[in-house]
Length: 305
Image (cartoon, rainbow, N blue to C red; front, side, top):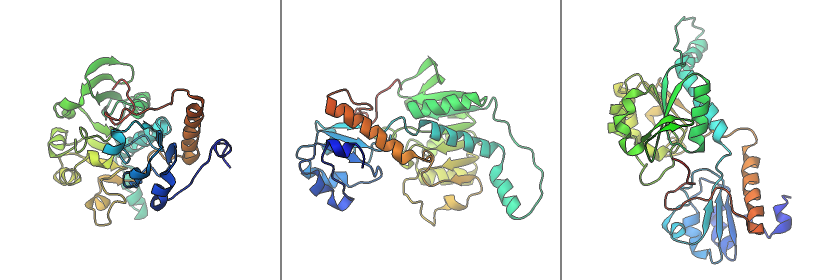
């Protein structure tokens, strides 16, 4: 039993029972952060004052009914920062050291000597300058890479990114980077931001990494860019359709690394998510300010991005 259950009446429900469980509830913890059940059950939220989602992204619950209500929305920002940063460094090293080909050659017991790339001095752009983006920037810098950012407003002298480019002018800067790492939140402004025009603006030897949301990318345009050689490769942890359909060409492309939405999922992450909610619950019961309050107009917790 979690201590919360000694302090409050707790109801557990699956998606199909959410409407009934919401009646009379003051707070809702959306533990299944990919669930789309909340909008359909929203009519039953007759007392709800606070909704917490067990993820950094809030797009599954940020529908008009919630956005226009007085219900406070919080997320689990901070849990996955370092884990996702480690994933990004890992796939960048995998590209540079040609690990995928080494595995394929090993499977065939084929000894083929090659030379590999250095990542020190290479230039990465991190699109999304929130806490996860900053954790990525710090780790890539520690590995010897040069890092810039892209966020809502342009600026110089940022402690983690140095130069931050305005996302609205992103395509004009993409040709300067060896690696483009996407971790931006999904909003109406960012949906489909990486389309044919964006990939055409990238260098043909650049690699693309998406650990944000699948809908940030126009998948067909990415596939075409990879086939045409407009970019050299992609590491994708998120997709606009999940699970990734078995007939997706991304599965079989030699220059693509696919993982099943797991870049942040370290051993113990589920307990960590519960503890973030538990800490906020204690704050809520005590009338103290909540952590990670989302600006429902922006779609994320405001920061210096």
